[in-house]
Image 1 (cartoon, one colour):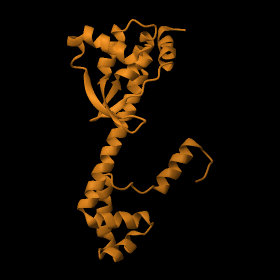
Image 2 (cartoon, rainbow, N blue to C red; image 1 turned 135 degrees about the vertical axis):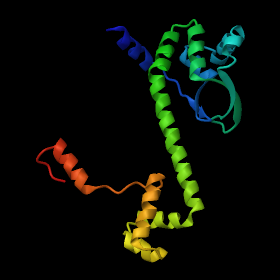
Image 3 (cartoon, helix red, strand yellow; image 1 turned 90 degrees about the horizontal axis):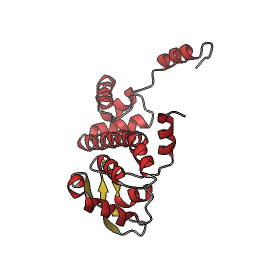
Image 4 (spheres, rainbow, N blue to C red; image 1 turned 45 degrees about the vertical axis):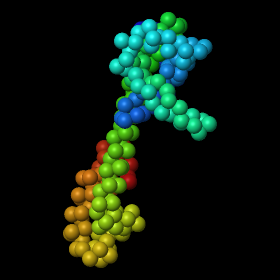
Length: 198
């Protein structure tokens, strides 16, 4: 097993659950401490913070999190960089595995979270645009119902060409998905799977 594979195996043994705040991924002291293998995670991480206050002060924040009991608690949380520094300062057998997770799997998880955040932001923007443009809201609803442009035009007092223009603008804003081009789909399937018909 080479070094890279060894790090993959180490990383796969770690469970860290980042929380998202303001588009940033954060790791709570408690979660990080558990992953590092401390029996008293919060106390152990607080000791590391006290000993390395100047080095860590720019990499942690206090966040309000809702617990399973429904109450909100203020907890210390680290950025990915801060969690990496803490895992370098920790003297546990699990520290190397946590560093591997943050370096490899952590990056993948953070990228996925960023993509999710971008998707949510796009949905919010779409909702705002629909709220600001009642006509678009009607057109989108009629399109979801499966109506053709001419039918939508009759219901909105627009020509089908004007409806098409609105739909193209809505597609470019991410409000609706562009229609599936069956001809292109057939050509793609035939290229990938010769002899198969759609």
